[in-house]
Image (tube, rainbow, N blue to C red; front, side, top):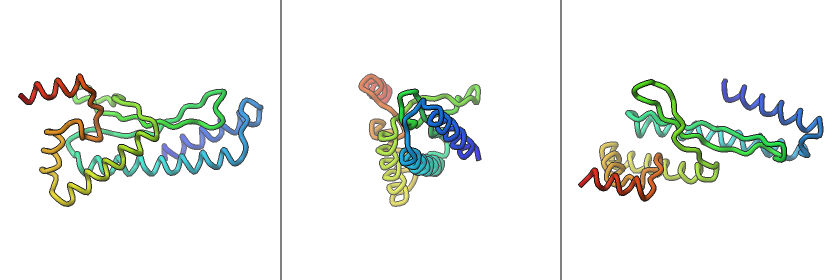
Length: 153
């Protein structure tokens, strides 16, 4: 799969940097990274599955990414939140979340799915439209919130 190919590429790059002395990382760091990667990849898959179930008309997609720097002992993770442009069909990154923020949002996404299971999809959609600041798929700052309130008035 694409995710496994990407993981192999990062592991090969990391191993090469360790071999050439560009990174001071031991086997424990590499094993920790692989474990964290596998956990994050499963969480991203879960978020995408729930998103398809709860928001079938939206084109949100989560993608696990990582950053490798010369000073980093192990690559750091981030999650890209993407949306498909309805006019061009191209995927656009709309947010970049730290892994910690993603896990927090994933819990909120799970809660929305549980609410949908209990009260139905129409109830959840209406609630998210009425309270966009509680939508775990979106970033709503003060300016966006004011604009949304003006649109609803």
